[in-house]
Amino acid sequence: MPKTYQPSEKIPSSEITPEKHYYTRRQFIQLAAAAATTAALAACGVRPPEGEPLPNPSAAPSTSPSPAGGSEEKLTSYEDVTTFNNFYEFGMDKGDPAKFAGKLQTSPWTVEVYGLVNQPRTFAIEDLLSGYTQEERIYRMRCVEGWSMVIPWQGFTLSQLLKAVEPTAEAKYVRFETLYRPEEMPFQSYKGFPWPYQEGLRLDEAMHDLTILSTGLYGQTLLPQNGAPLRLVVPWKYGFKSIKSIVKIELVAERPATLWNTTAPREYGFYSNVNPDVPHPRWSQASERRIGEGGRRPTLMFNGYEKEVAGLYAGMDLRANY
Ligand SMILES: Nc1nc2c(c(=O)[nH]1)N[C@H]1C(S)=C(S)[C@@H](COP(=O)(O)O)O[C@H]1N2
Ligand SMILES: [Mo]
Image (cartoon, rainbow, N blue to C red):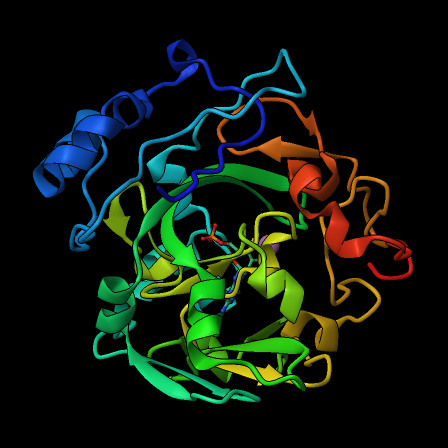
């Protein structure tokens, strides 16, 4: 049975509105699949997305203990998750991706996995959907801009894909690349960024069980604005590490260049682990605004996943390696 990671603070079902329909029906969805998923979303008064239902929806949730106690975290609404986005290929405003990403042709779609591997392979997106068990992961997402969400993703661990291509002993990092297609991604003609969007992880970060490739959210395939058909989700790092609409995954020996690190190295480090104690040069990272809620809440070390990931950085100076 695959693990489901909840935000570490407990979510009492009485507190969850309107997405409680999704929550309380999850087990039902799991059994009844497509029709039930659509019904659950319709019940929230949210128009169901056009995506196909996933072949293998939601694993049953396991509730993790509440170390923080007291405060509740509920899922961010489907509406907010799909209309308040950063996807600069479609523009710089939060509403631009939802407005313009419909142009993106997500089929056919292939993902090339290559570099320092024994079994390089190009996967059709269909192979990734059917070849790997899609499980649910409810994760916090913390943008470096100081806002956050709680999103129920579907996807599979990146480690499974990496194991399939057999990284060689020289492979130390993983480089990810977004589609480059200015005809469909209008802001890629803006010369201010080194397109295509690229990101990178250390190999051990990429192999960590919390690191997933997501194919859907709220029980539906990803909408283009959320990075269809395949995007990375690394919940303990700032959101910009979670690169969208991936076409290439390369195993490399050296730390790869990333779009944000290249654009503003002092502001966006390679690691970009969520850390309330290390301010961005232009603003504090000590607190965050949860989208859909008033006020601010304290930002948690490693976005609340310290227990799971702190070991990856044992002995490292997290201020120097921001
Ligand atoms: N290719 C690409 N991936 C991207 C971005 C982007 O502009 N282009 N924005 C990043 C940022 S800054 C954030 S906060 C998250 C937002 O993901 P969401 O819109 O699905 O919530 O996507 C990340 N992935
Ligand atoms: Mo972000």
